Structure formats: C-alpha cells, structure tokens
Image (cartoon, rainbow, N blue to C red; front, top):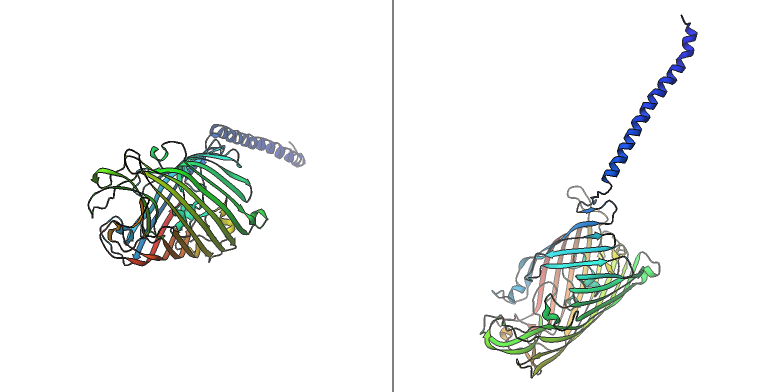
Length: 495
C-alpha cells in the first residue's frame, strides 16, 4: 500500500496528463472548426452580398454591382396671374394643380470594375420615349472616360446638378435653352483634383428626322475649375466654368392644334419658347418659323419637309461657397439661324435669325450648419446631406435651407400681348412671328427641409414680372397679365 506521500507526489503528474489529454481534445475541436470555416469560405467565395443600404447587390470581389435607383417629385401648385383657367392645353399651364413632376425608376451599377451602367425609365409626361437615361461608361482611365447612350450633356452648372439636388423646385430660364439629356457619345474626366472637362457629340432627339444627313449634329463641351481645391482651401468652393452647345438639327413644322379656331393650312416650327420658372405660363414668349403650306387644312398636320436650324449656345458659370453659405450665378447667350421650304418644290425658303440671353443670381444658406464644400464634387454640387437626420418621434433636425434667386430672359424680337388667341403675333418679314413678352424677370424665395439624404420637402414662392402684357396662346380669350405669382410645394423621395 502506497503512503500518503507517494500519492501526493503522483497528483501533479496525473493533473498534467489529464490536462494534456483535455487540451488535445480542445485543439482537435478548434482545428475542426477552423477547417469547417475554411471549407465554408471556399464554397461561398464567389457569392456577393446585399449593400448596406439594402437597395443593391455586390459581388464578392467587388467588381460587379447593381443598385435600385429612383426619384419621385410630387408637387402642389397655386397660380395667380389674372389669366383665365379654361379647358385649353395652354391655359392648363396657369391652373392650380397637383402634379407628378418626376417619377423615375431604374438600375445602375458596375460590370467588371471598369464599366459603369445606368438605365432609368420615366413614368410621367406625354413623351412616348419612356427612357430618361441609359448609358455605358468606360472608366478604366479616370482622366479620359468614355460614355455612350442617352445621358445628361456636359453643359452648365445648373444642368449638371442632379434633379434631386437642385436648390429650387425648377431651374432658371437658362436651363430651358440647354441640351439636357441626348443620345450620343462623350469623353470626360478629371485631369487633376479641382478640374473637370466633358466633350460630347449628340443628336437632338430620339428619331432619325433630327439627323437626316449626319450622326450627332450637336456638339457640347464644358470645362470647370475649383480654385478653392486647386489652392488647398478645402473648406471653400470657388467654381469657374464655361460651356457651349452648338450644331445643327431639324424640326418638322405643323399646323395648330387650337380647335378654338378653324383648321389651318399654315405650318410652323417653334424655335424658342420660355415657360415661367415655377411651371406657370407655358408660352411666356414664343418664336415660330413658317413652313410649307398644306394642300388641305388640318389640326396638327405635318409638313413634308423639315425646318433646318443652326444653334450656337454659350454659358458662363460662377459659384462661391464658404461654410454654410453659397452664391451661384450663370449667364447664357444663344443664337438660332433657321430656314424652311415654303413649297413642296423646295424653290423658296423662309428664314429667321433669333437671339436670346438669360442670367440668374442665387443665394442659399444652410441654417443647420451643413458645409457646401462637402456637397461639391466633379464640377457640380451633388447635394447637401443633413448633419442630423430627422427621425419621426426620435429627434434629429434634418437640414434646413433658405434661398433666393433672381432670374431674367431677354429675346431680340418683340412679342405681342394684346391679340386674342395668338393668331397674329408680330410678323417677321422673312416668315416668322414672336408672341408675348420678349423679356421677363422672376424672383423666387425658397425654404427647403432635407429630412434625410433620401427625403425632402421644398417650398417656393415665385413672382414673375413681364415687360409686355402676356396672354394665353391658342384660345380666343382677351385677358392679359403683367405679373404672375406662383406658390409651389414639393415632396421628394430619391434613392
């Protein structure tokens, strides 16, 4: 029989043996778990994941992605001008109304890391082309990217600011002259931080008549510099830019759709028209070129031959932002030279030269302290993000902005503001006419509540002063107005 001392000496050895046995079992278990994890990774390494915002997917290697994107603008608008609200296509533009200003849904993303894509469909408006934008963008060289498809042309600071990020409900008069989104091809990039450029060749519409003799009749170019970034002033934006849109396109002259008067054989092509900035009077000014006469009177009848138009549009941009304050201004000048056959034999032509200019000045201040330098990227303002998102019932303020803008347009042909129905207008000896006010100015006050980066409520009050009394075209009323007041409220969702 072993003594107590012998047993005491054997106890540490037993504990050591038991510990080794137990640790070996733990190591075997850990090794099995590690091997199982490795096998899981090997099995699922080709799988991607849902993006953090829940609106997209990305591959495991990060080179392929797809995102759901959309924009909804729902507006309420009240108009006071003294012009009558009649059951007419033009008088509807001065009526109080609810409107889905924009309703878009689509996808964008990346393929194989170096190809961006976008396809967005438009659910509003009367245009039969439901595609708002759709393009492929080859981004392997960031300084010289290539984009093909239908996309926003590189023109003006306002135009390059996305619809979800504009400071007011509507852009200024100058934007009504610009190319907006067209079919074409573009090379663009950022050669150095603080400098951007874009060069595009595009056609004026979706159909072949706009380019009957060539591909891409319109050229657009833009170059910008942010002197703040170029000089290391990260908290300030000092933006300078210049852009141009020029070339040739065609329009088919048509007879009037005004059923308030007799059908006509005279066709006309609208070369220039302005609508007041808050979606008020749709033909505050209009210039038309006479086309060939039809053999039979008709409403909305089309001429056999198109009117050819040469366009030359130039724009200057300036913006300065420091902290929560931003000042922005642009000046545009456009000239159009147009001709249209007067007969089917193409033996005689009507010709018309039109020029117009616009400018605006605006001030925007972020009451809740958001910095404008954080909202500027790639030669444009990409939108303010609230420092504190408003959460219903759980605090937060969102971002609050106040804004004011003064805007004006001027055209070279005087219009008429006293003729009922717009049936006469000012006759231009070479075959055209101009109607309503050749000059007008609008002052717009804005209050914006950006609830979070995806939701906003915007309120605008716009006062337009016409230099000449205006009337509703295409009706037989004799009412005129020299002032228009519009109050508009927008609810916005973008993602």
